[in-house]
Length: 302
Image (tube, rainbow, N blue to C red; front, side, top):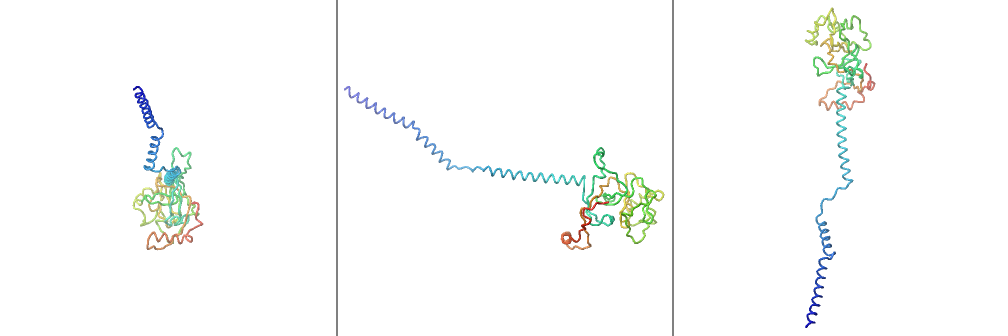
């Protein structure tokens, strides 16, 4: 009787130990759960694939392209600002459209005009190379009658000067002007108004009406007296120039500067163009070698 319980207890003990060992093995085995989780994670990674990362070299290339665009825009803006500054304050290009300054300047001459030379700098006069306007200077100015137009003439009279012409010869303050170096006369007929200014016997149809009225107030003893802040100008081609004889004085504020360089010159031919600007451009390009005045290129203006 005592053995059966002992046998039963021993068997139960062995069975209990076997069960506990099995449970312990299932609960604490380090392989199965971890292996399954890693496998699950790996499978999830394979199935749920996200966007591929951008290579570093590609990012660097894009950044370099953006920097190049930014540098290009900055360079363009700087160039525009510099060009505007130069045109506004330092130099500007002009073209000669008429024969009034022959033979000093010809039709088709392209000029660079120094806008600093006659500047009025006030406190900056000690630093900048400003010069007063003198007789004999060639100036570019806004036409007093129509300020949107630009003229180029030679200064003959400065404020306070007494001027008249007799038979085409210019007299300044009672003395004949020595202008043989640059002045020419192409007119074949004597013109009383033009050649004996201001003592001509008739009024030219080309005279501005406002100037005709004003002129009587500035003529003293047969001379035109240049008022303060004004300048009397003539074209070097004395017989083919609409100048101060016909429209009056040039105000100081209208003067832009002085031409100092002919950077390009091309001979203009009298050719009719049926198709306007395009045909003119094609004609110019085709005939450029023969029409260009190479001897006047980079010629200093005096």
